[in-house]
Amino acid sequence: MADRLIEGIVFDLKKFAVHDGPGIRTTVFFKGCPLNCTWCHNPESKRRDVETLITTKRRKCLDLSYSETKEVLGKKVNVNELMEEIKKDIPYYDESGGGVTFSGGEPMMQVDFLYELLHACKMEELHTTVDTSGYCSYESFEKINDLVDLYLFDLKLIDEEKHRMYTGVTNKNILNNLTKLTEDENEVYVRIPIVPNLTDTEKNINDSIEFLKKLNRIKKVDILPFHKMGSNKFQKLDIPDFHKHTETPPEEQMNELKNRFESAGFSVKIGG
Image (cartoon, rainbow, N blue to C red; front, top):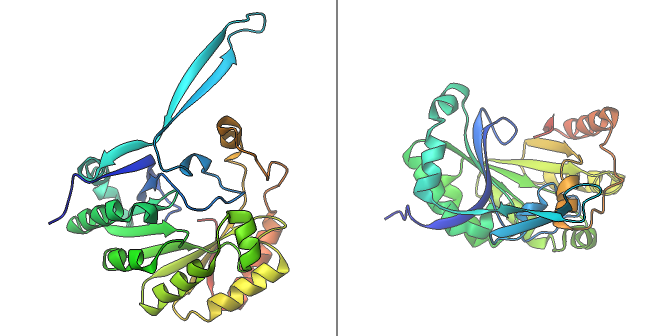
């Protein structure tokens, strides 16, 4: 029997999302991520626990007193509570061919909670998408595969040493999981972040194309240009911003990369 009272921790819920799968969607952002990507644009998602962020600032230029503001990052919710919000937008899903996307952070870190949410969505006949880094046991994927219509699978760096250096973890099980997901005939779109001088190198692009060509079911690739939307979050969280001087890749470069993947046989979209 489904457990609609099982709790998880989320840090955001975005309605009318159009970049997280087909149609108009509700995207639920899970808190907690096993990776530590240097270019992360949701650094508030890294820790799984609910956090209270206290910001102290001087009230006025000539005033020595200070004020404190508190911001709570994350919230415990159960399946029923989330589904009440999700179901409010069913007419938009039906009209646009949309549905619900579970993102993060990394939703696979809370796989039991994710399973119950997916099950609840399927009871409502909703299209389900899971956006994942792929860093988990394949047993976790097997638990939910039958309830997932589409995976958005992040492929960052093919070279294991560089992957470990810039994300904090090995990519061995990530690549293995992507391979197994396609072998088990799941629908998977691959997403590649384009970070200048890191993931956009000639070697990484070539290696990514060659790896994906071996996976017969991978037909669609999204290339995601680096942006600085997370910069203010790094400062607020007092986390080093390793890419504060990195610029967004120019449109010309993104189009060139798009052409290269298309020439290899993939359907490609710039952005999510």
